Every structure is written in C-alpha cells, then in structure tokens.
Length: 247
Image (cartoon, rainbow, N blue to C red; front, side, top):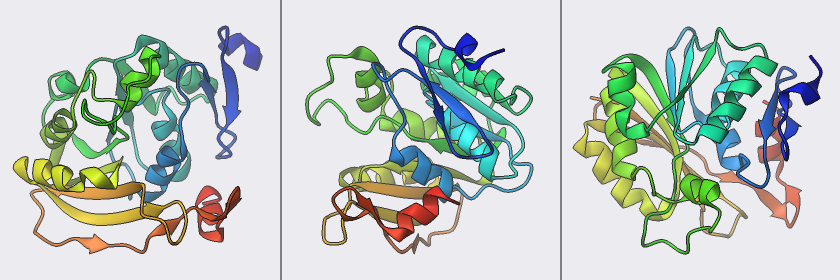
C-alpha cells in the first residue's frame, strides 16, 4: 500500500527519524512535542520489558521506544477514538503489530483492563494542567490532551502503581510547578521517586519540563541528573539536545 492509503482527510505522515518509522498525525487535533522525545530518551527500559503507555495519543511513545530500546511488548491506552485510530494505523504502517497494541479506553480503568502488577514499566505524558491552570483550548482533542478533563494526576499515578510489578518503574514527563503534588501522590501509592531531570528552555531560564522515574516499593533515594538545556539562542538547539534527537 502507498503511504496515502493510510491517511484520512487532514492527516499527514511525519518521519520520526528512527528506524525509518513514521507517525500519522492531524495538526488540527494534536501533534506530539519535544516532551515525548525527551521522555523516550529518559526511560530506561530493559530487554524484553512489558511496557504500558498511559494516554498514548497517536502512539508516538511506543513507536519511538520500539525503535530505540530492546523492550518486548508495548500496550498503549487512549480514550480519544480518533487519536487511537491514528495510532493503530501508524502501528500497521510501521509493521509493528506484533510489538505494539493500541486499546481504546480510560486511564482510570487501566488496571481493570490489563490486570494488576502485570507490567515491567509504565510510560506516560499525561495532561499537565488541572482546572486551576490557565484557559482550556476550545478544541476538545487538544483540551483533553493538555488539561485534566477525563483523568487527573492522581488517576495516572494510582493506575501506574496498580499495573506495575513490585520494584518496577514509572517514567513520566510533567511540569515542574506541580512537583510537590506529584511527589505527594507518588508516595501515597508507594511509588518512590528515584531519578529526576529538569529541562530548561535556555541556560538561565527556569525549567518548564521535568522527567521523573519512580519505583514501586523502592527505597527512599533520588538521583538528580544534569539538566537538559534546549536552546543556545532563539531557534538554535544546543548540542546536548541535538545529541538526544540523534540517539
């Protein structure tokens, strides 16, 4: 089949620059950002790991991780049917049907759908904003991706703890201004923060992203990794970021 045979009206096929893999996206709905790429670089998955992606969107995380790790099978859940359909078609386009499985469903029900303590790792790029944080996008698909409309931070962390095997890890990207709340919710569900990396837009600007690893039932100790600096100057990426994109 030709690439256009996989596309619906308004969609495009974007090159992920990993193993020749591409992803179907609709810019009028929602496209993945740098946060997904940084999370895929941060997540330390082992050979054969079973991985769950909570809120996969168009499937970028499992496709990137299938290209860059030796993890085994990826399950991915997404509540928006249009996004899930794009993810499924991207999986077929990249011939990853045996490795990546997309399920339409609510993050709140993840442990009911997949079973408790059934995964070696969870990855998630959840909505960053709650009802108190800024204006919601009038475009519903974008609003759902960015605001806690259909699930909350607590839902994401609770279900991550429920589906992880003891001693296994959650990898998450979020916003630094919610770190206190994130740590509080993680410890409520026995997820011990183990690694943290702050992402700064410029060297002397405050961070606008945080990458986190937390282990179910882990011992109290967290490693603060060197920060990631995105830009040297406007529209010029740092060598550090370019190296991450080339990994």
